[in-house]
Image (cartoon, rainbow, N blue to C red; front, side, top):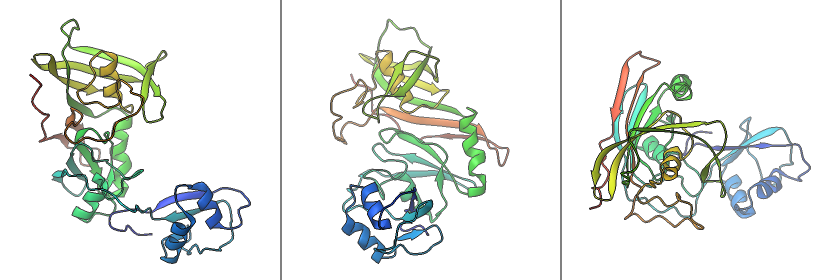
Length: 295
C-alpha cells in the first residue's frame, strides 16, 4: 500500500485463532476502534492483506497472515510550532524539531509529527528517522533518504559511533563537582512511558558539564554515550537537577497536559559522525536556543 498524505500503512499479524472473520479479530485486537470505523475503512479499500487483496467485511479469518491498514484520527489538533530543514542531500535530511512535536506517528499523533510533515513537504515517501528524540525535546533529528542505506546509518547509533551534545536548563548546585559522569541501570517504570534507575549493571552513560550559571539555575552540557529512553532526564533528576519544565521527572501521580508556555528545557544541539556511505566527516548543529536562564 502506498503512502497517503505522508502516512505509511500500519501492519498487524493474524495469529492462529477461531475468529469468524478478520473484522471480528480487528475489533477485538483494537478495542478503541469501533466496528463501524473498520467497515468504513474496508469499504474505502484501506485494508488489504499481505498479497494486496482487499479485506472485506465478511471475509473469513485465516491466521498466520499480515493485514495492512491506514490509521486515521477523527480530530488532530495542530501543534503550533514549525520544523526547519537544515540540510538535505541524496543520503540525509537533517531537521530542527520544535518542542511538543513527535518524531513519528503514534497514539493521537499522525499528521502532526516531524516525519509526516517532512514527507509531505519534501515529497520523499521513503524517508525514515535514523534515531529519535523525545516529543518534549527540541533539536536535531536525522533521516535516511535511501532505504538501501538506512541500516548503515542506524548502525552508527547501535555501535555508539555518534557524538551527540545536548543543552539543558536545570537548578544550580554548587556542592556538585563538574564535569561528572553518570552511569546507571535504567528500566521501564510505571506507567510504561516513564523510566527509573535501579541497582545493577549500568546500561546508560552520560557526561555532564556546566556552560553558564545564573542565579539558582544553570545551562548544562549533556553528552549521552548511550541512548536509553529518557536517559538525560532520568540522570539529571537522579543528580537532584530536574530539568526545567519537566512534567515527568521527578514523577507525579498524573502527568499534566501540554502547556505550550512551558517547553521542556532540553535541546539536541549538535551531532557528529563519519558518514558510512560517503566517508565524509559530518557535523550538524541546531539553530534553536533554549530560553534565557531564569533570574
